[in-house]
Structures are given as structure tokens and as C-alpha cells.
Image (cartoon, rainbow, N blue to C red; front, side, top):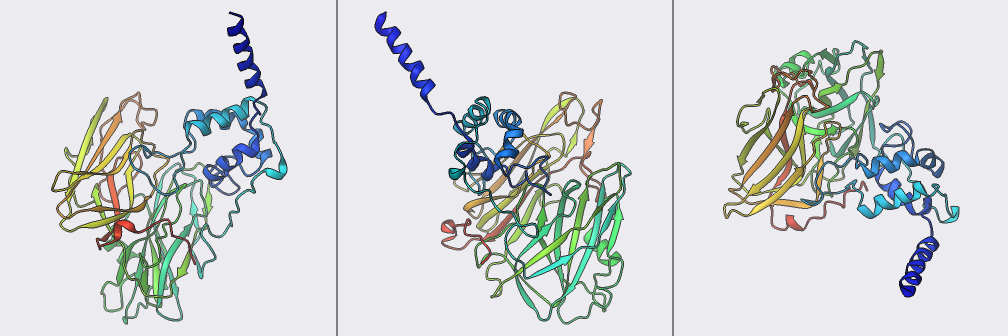
Length: 447
């Protein structure tokens, strides 16, 4: 008994002598996973760029990390890995908790890591050209807005583009932006630089309709060349940059960015948005342009059963598509709306081998990422991609926009309001070439 007592006292003494964690210990975790959004001018409600910032909200940080509300990373890290994962280990969460519970000590200032630097004008580098969008007044009428906008520009010569970055002006209200590139050959686009620049209505336009309404046709009435999804935006996501030789576009000196749709959330007060694009030029013509396929809503594959979601039920829907040739997947974007519950995608090869694509066990409409793999995922020819989504249309779902629940359907006539539903998997890929499985997609910085 005496030996047991001595042992117990020794353990207690050792624990009491263990140094308490300080900001020196947790700063790298905060800077890597939190500060990108939690800084002035971004979507986070408070800044987390200094010890003083973090100490003020130490217990908030503890609670939101322990509950895994923050940092938001919906994808299951145990299923497949992506670049730039914002996910804390159990050990990191405990370290933050111990720091908050033990006085949120600062520690040795000399050993505190330097806070990351975030330039206001770009997240990725110094652009070769900045192109402002037409300022837009978001009226405070409590209604969502879907805007079509053209942003014409003229270059001195035909130019190679490596990357296009969209910088949101009103980060609180912009839900998403899908940008295309309109570029002309030798045909003259006389009306390209003339108004209207913005078409405002409750639903998104089809491309053909926008071409006429925004004067995007050549003088002879023909359509220009259009590159889809050259720039996309969702809160919390960065600009997609691939290693040299992958992606990019060759454009004519007379060109325009077309905001296929920019979606603003509802507001009760008038607010302005002044967003802009940053263009980064490339020295050489694109070698391997990226391609895109979309499964599900507005895509190449049917949803089974049709996406008509009954009230007071949790229901599951599926869609699938077979790839006729081998592809190398670079980036994916799963998409659902408010009553989404879970999302799962994988491929089966002709030999019935499973290739994991993504799994989201708890869907959150507020956080929808473009997930890029560390190395391309190779899908052999003849493989079938399967996507499965569950929706919770019950009154137990706190995100349900209807109380009591009602039937919710897919968008009709271009409408993409959040109170309707969508079920999509958007895939950015390359036609497969030998050696694609070895490409390091993390080598994606602007030179």
C-alpha cells in the first residue's frame, strides 16, 4: 500500500511539473488552419493573427475545435486525402483545450512563430493584370440574387493565361461565382465593350440567352470561343493553380470574362460589391488544358430516383457515369444545398476495383470546397463513377428552410435558389497520359 501511495504521488507531481502549453505551441496550428479566414476583410467573424486576438476568444476556440465546428473541413480525411486539408488531430485539439483551460498563456515571445502574411490584392502573387468588375448594388430586399455579368478587356497581343483569380469584394454576401472566358479570333466583337454589362434577375441565365442579352456574339452573329470554369469562388476556398504545363488558356487580345452566375445571399440593407479578377500570364501556350464533367443536376447523368425530395423523410439518391477513356482527376467539387445530409463518390474499374473519390459524412452547405488531390486520381477506361447523396427533409434538420417541411425539387428554368436542391459532382480532369499518377499537384505556386 505504501509503494502504491508513493507511486500515485509521483505521478501527480510529474503531471504538475509538466509545462503548461502556451501560444508558442498553438500558434502554428492557428496560423495554418484558421488565420486564412479569420483576419480583417475576410469571412471569419474575428481576427486570429496574434496572441492578443486569440487570448480574447480562447474559450471560443476551445469549444469550436472540440466540437469540430472549426476549422471547417467536411471531407472525411480517413477516406481520401486532399491538398491543404484544414483538419485538426485529437492531439492538436487537446493542446488547444489545455492552453485555454490553463490561462491562455503567451509564452516566450521570442519563440512565437511569425504570423502569416496575407496581401489584400491577391492570395497567390503579384498579378500581371487586374480587371475590375462593374460595381453592383445588392438591394436590401431579403431576396437572393443571381447576376450575369460581362467583364470585357483588351490586351496588346494574344496572350497565354496560366491562372485567373477572383477576388470577392463583398465576402459576406457572395455565395459563389462561376466564371467563363469569352475570346474572339479574327472576328470583330463591336458590341463587346458596350452596355449592358450586368443582367439582374432571380434566376441564372442559360449561356445562349446571356450571349444575346450581354452582346457576346461576333458581328456576324457567330459565337466566340468560350472556356468554361476558368475561375470559381466559394467562401474559404483558394484559387486552383496546377503545376506548369497543366491548365491555362490561349486568349485573343479582345476577350471578356463572363460571370456565368454570381450568387448573392439575401440582405436587409443595400450593399455594394466591387469584385475583380487577377490575371497571371504564362510564358508558353497551354500544353494540357483541363477538362470538366458534371454528374447529376444539370450534368451528363440522371439522378435516380428523380430529385423530388418528400417531406418528413431522409432519402437517398444516386447518379453514375462510365468514362469511355482513362482520365486523370485533379480536382472535384461536390455540391448540394441546405437539406443535404451526406455525400459519397467512388469509381469501380472493369475489374471491380474500388477507387475512392470523396466522402462527406456530415454535409454543410456553408462549406463547399474544390478539393484537389496531392497526385491525380487515375480512372481507367470503362470505369463507372458512382455518386450517392442523402437528404434530410425533416423538421429535425436545423438547416431545413421550410417549417413544416415541404416537397423540395431540383432547380427549374435556370433557378438555383438555395431553398431548392441540387445534387452534383463536378470533376476537373485531364485525358490520361503515362506518368500522370506521379505528378505532384502541390507544386502549384506562381513563378
